[in-house]
Amino acid sequence: MLTLFARFISFAFNPYFLILPIPYLLVMRETGDPVYAFKWTLFTLTFLGAIGLSVFLAVRKGYFTDLDISQREQRPLFFSLLAFFAVIYLIALFYFQGPLVLFIALAGIFFSLMVFSFVNTRIKASVHVASITALIFAFSLLYNGIFLLLLFLIPLIGWSRVKIHRHSKNEVLIGAILGILIPLVMFLIFKVLLQISLSL
View (cartoon, one colour):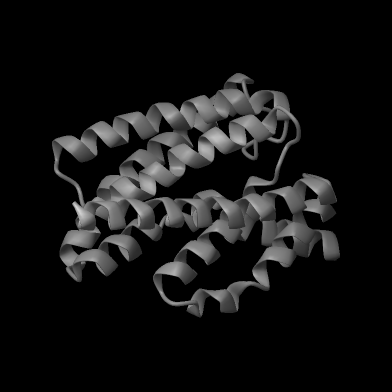
């Protein structure tokens, strides 16, 4: 029974699902225009759909053993795939003059890919736990801490990943630490850049 519940939690809080409403929330917060936010959400979901389809096909072809990319040796290919689509998305943002907040979010994704690529050479950190932790802390910084009420999700998802044998406790812990550090570093970098730009 507990294993079934753990599988449900792991599936329900898949990073791929969690990221779906993020473009709307970010653009809506920046512009206050629901139509504009919805347009850029659809634009972003097109790329997310392409990533999801690519991963699915890679599993079918045997490049990945499963949709979670559970094998650490397979993750560099997955990170390269994400980087490829991120570059195309960046070009499209420039071409269509996308909202600034999406450029900032994309910078965070590039930074995360670099960090995870390095960490992956040592240990298979939990992307599930890192993703939910990063989202909670990032949106807490944006919305003055109200998202900290969701902190209970971090140990719950960590427990589920260990319970279904996708990660060890250390891998979950490292995922949580990265999920805290990455948005904090990005926040501090952009805060410094903003202060520099205002002083010029």
